[in-house]
Length: 541
Image 1: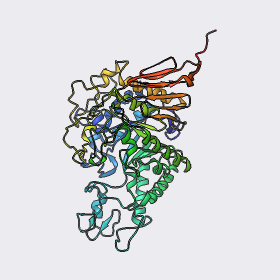
Image 2: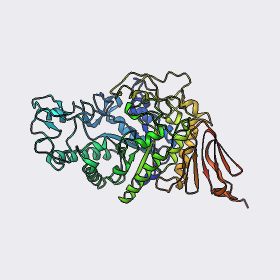
Image 3: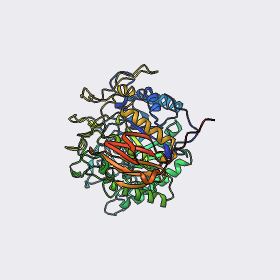
Image 4: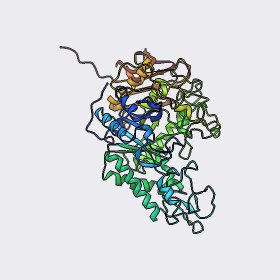
């Protein structure tokens, strides 16, 4: 269950990388204290290598009061003791390197905790401009602590003061609107580069940047924010040219030309507020904002949605990236710590296979949220924990429950299931242990799809795609590979008579699918990758 290291950098092979998001406090617990930790992640690296993962993205693991589950950072240079401290990360990086797996950390670039030494010092020093301060009350500002007696601008929760990267538009009547090239904003840019560089020097190969669009304030079109990230990227590349930056922006058409290697389609972001991703996955269950309404999702049994919104957004992003001369790519997650899992409400694991296969065959960086490969569900009804609640219907705890390992056979290093949140109470909940032994399991299906993606250049994120239909089934070709996806509960057909001729097509990956008489038949929830031009098997002489 091990993989050989490669000499190529992570950026060199970005178009073939499969990313895996591990929420560290929920993934695996090595010391048995109930809290997931980095040694627990290390203990499961053989599993991730067997699955075919190239890189693991860890949510913030830096020192924090944990009022926002680590997104309120109090020290950017040290790992929080609850995850095992700095030494645990060093061990994880070394073990991952042995298996050819890159470690990607999560950087909160736009704010800190209100307990960070920077903020505490700034609150006492009227000359300190590391944060955005107003001497008088201003809309959206919060009364600050310390001798300064001023008001600060938060970036998300009130306990997350915004770092000062300047304002795109200044106003003499509002002196706290410093220009982007003022001393305070420049100081923070330098600190941002140095923080990332120090972790790169220790072996980290990339960062996912939280709220990447939030740095420069009052920035129409995020023009100045884009310039900031282009500068940061250039400075980092001078020292670590093979490492990658992934943004939480939700607008690949803007973020990737700005200097990011990847930007995810998300449940928010862009001029359409995340409509492309929501049109695929959001079935009104789990983490749902009341303002989203109830549009039909493509990945739904009723078969009333359409992937056209997503396809159009991807096409716009691909065109913008190409026009900018960027080598970056969009990203497509199965879920994340802020959004509903694929299995949620009435959508079960069988129905989710088409969604998972889409993520692994579309020209984008696929990000598999931990547990989605076994069909873990969004668990409703959990109490808020560490800032997980964002509103009356937007509870994120249900997407952050412990990874369901089950009774795994002996491994080189021990690891326990986390108790960070309650385990899914369903007695039939899926586990890795159960699915490892089942050749028809979702886990085996996902592993097979990953293997095909990694081995076949036609599925490169930079290889062409041609869309035939965006409904049921959603059909597209990647060169001479055809992908057909039917997440509905109604059987569907695809006429292949004009594609295969006298060639016998094969099904490298399939679920409830068969070819007969030039017709690809997909049962309810069926999906398949069809090789329209398989390489003939050499004849023995």
